[in-house]
Amino acid sequence: MQRQSPSTRCWGQSQTNRAAPRRISGQPYEKEKTMASSDQLLNLLSRHIGKGNGIGVKQLAEQLGTPERHVRTLVSDLRDEGHAICGTPKHGYYIAATSEELTQTCEFLRNRAMHSLGLEAKLRRIPLPDLLGQLHLPT
Image 1 (cartoon, one colour):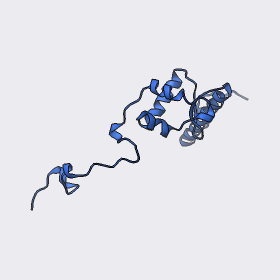
Image 2 (image 1 turned 90 degrees about the horizontal axis):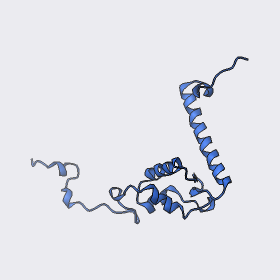
Image 3 (image 1 turned 180 degrees about the vertical axis):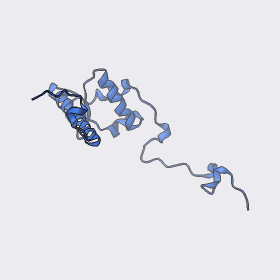
Image 4 (image 1 turned 120 degrees about the vertical axis):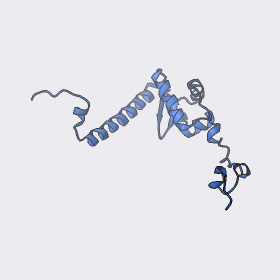
């Protein structure tokens, strides 16, 4: 029996003889994706002012040529720096045009955080105030 090299054991053919993987409608190969900078994201978001002009994370990732997870990290970094980056699953990401949009985003983030804390309290089987370290006053 002829012994196969490690490169042919799984595929039954040489790695060099295999056809190159096909691209899906203009999407770059995963290995071609780069890590965009927060400045690049901010520049792109400057064209998306106001809730009605939001852009989804998938489109941002495609335009920046970077993974969606990295876009979310950059959004978080920009928010940490004080940029008024708003976003919801329904409207996508955008820069706040009004104080109301910023307030709505803050409420969305607070509700999401409280939901996560509520889940943690249930998993730990303790009341939410105990999880948050609130003091109990005698009644």
